[in-house]
Image (cartoon, rainbow, N blue to C red; front, side):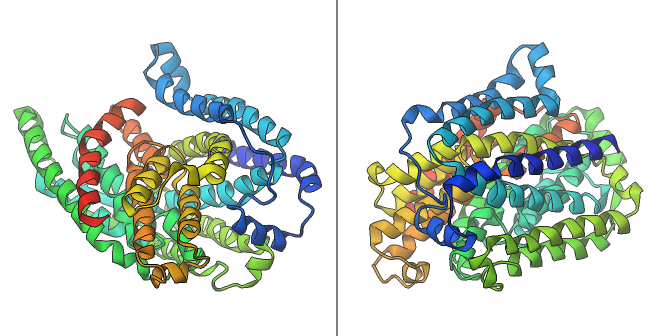
Length: 484
């Protein structure tokens, strides 16, 4: 109950804070909401154009990333301090506040408002609904933690990710995976590959899978177009599953005989409880798919109408709570800690990354990105440290400018030869390389947090990059020659 009150208070404070600086922003953006949205589409989704920003304005963002990377591996005292989510909020507040001041002084108040209200709030509500509802589904049981069974878990998760979202699939399966491997000592690599496949690459086949693809859908990319990314997904996931199977086979042989015996003797058939939550998950999926401007044209003229989607998701959370037996979440060892951690850290990330996105948007053409492979790597590497959704939109805008096309349908129709290949490169880069860091995609942090709650010692921010750099980057290099 106390934790529920904490997150509720945080959301209330956040909303009140928005309204507190709304009058200031209103002085800068005197256009009606509908015009702001139309204008923001032409100006990279940041409403009124402010002053050009110097490069040093990304310092708060760099400091935010360094805090996430260094604090957990610093002294024991500092690492213990960092474990408290309230302290993460303090760090977000400090660096976010500095970035806020810089942006307001440079007349980017409209961008702050748009980022928090139309990006951060929907982002957290979507993640929160998938996290809470999937937490009420109990996949009970303890099968043998063999390399084959673990590989099958990852395969199923990778398939589900495209249809219930990377967050939904991650939260549905991470606890059963951890329970199955609870008798084993060598588990970290399993969680790492889980993040690679289930929390990221598996979500590349539909707009429901990952936020960048959903934004592309809102921009006019047909719902079924992303099925065309199947070859890239099949290639990368197949390699990852083979590498994982070999790796886990080696690690399995390192387990003690006592651990193997305990794993074999503690067998419990798989069973499913809390099935009603699949209805509420479907509700979230349908809300994302249909409660948008493609089906409700009024949203184009008044974007606030779009919050009917978030209202439906909150209602689905309430329905999940009311219709789910309390013991099911207790059986899952469910806590709000992971989603609170994401909410607290990402409010700082979303605000501090605004100058970086503005610089990228205003000076992106100076990068000299013209070829599909360049779009793949540029989109991917920026998505690794920035939120992959706005990064996707930024490079989509660059692709439009480079080809001289103004409509996504023209890109897909290859009105300019090779234009569709640019969109494929941007889409794959944004989704796949979200796995490069913990902050590349929100489920990464949530899976890490759940694993740590279950006594798995996860690698630090930099340690994780060593895994992704050694495993994913070679795969992406090969993909460059084959697909781009």
